[in-house]
Image (cartoon, rainbow, N blue to C red):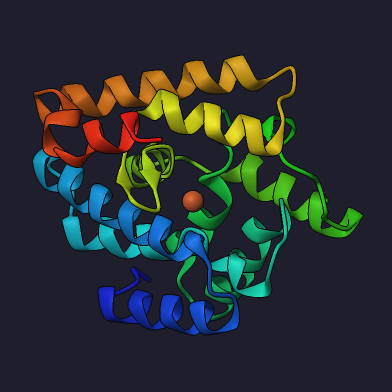
Length: 199
Ligand SMILES: [Fe+2]
């Protein structure tokens, strides 16, 4: 079942009440970016927007690391939103490899196994890719240069041996959507200059 925009907004409002923080604005920026790119690239902007809103839904539980992908997945799969649930997991794994996660692995052995199985079975669609991209473009204040956000995440969460491969994948996803939209993606986001060079 595809998640409607209204439902996604309700989920995000619920999650914000439980754990307010910059992650909420980050989710809204990712959603807006996803809708704009979807619109230019022949995808459904409402579907992309709703998926962007809920991709970090697992943050409702508080400050967690890898568990946030599973906590969001659990809520949405229980309610029948399988695509949105899958994206809660896949947005953090562009190369579809469990080991690429650069933050702390705070999952139990059982959950770790389940995430690995979900990743192994997942067939990534343009919507998985679009949310991976928009997650990597979205600061809470707005879209910025992807390189800035990738470095920002690495500085906060650390790096591992797979990081360069993950970054290369992100650049190829960027190129894919740039081609799909037929122009310079950053021209769709005038705030990117300010957000990239501020502070
Ligand atoms: Fe995110």
